[in-house]
Length: 53
Image 1 (cartoon, one colour):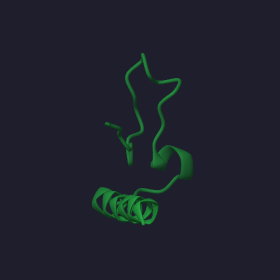
Image 2 (tube, rainbow, N blue to C red; image 1 turned 90 degrees about the vertical axis):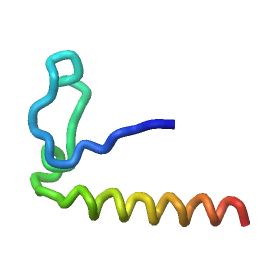
Image 3 (cartoon, rainbow, N blue to C red; image 1 turned 30 degrees about the vertical axis):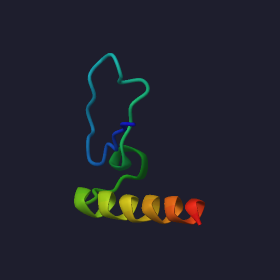
């Protein structure tokens, strides 16, 4: 499994420009990437653990 989270990117290559976005483009805020990935991983782990129990 692989995925990406665009955080503060505002410009995208032409071939994905119509479908790609970022947190900054959608919400108008600049985020700290490390905090986003930490929170995402914590929530993901919690969901996996809950499904296994």
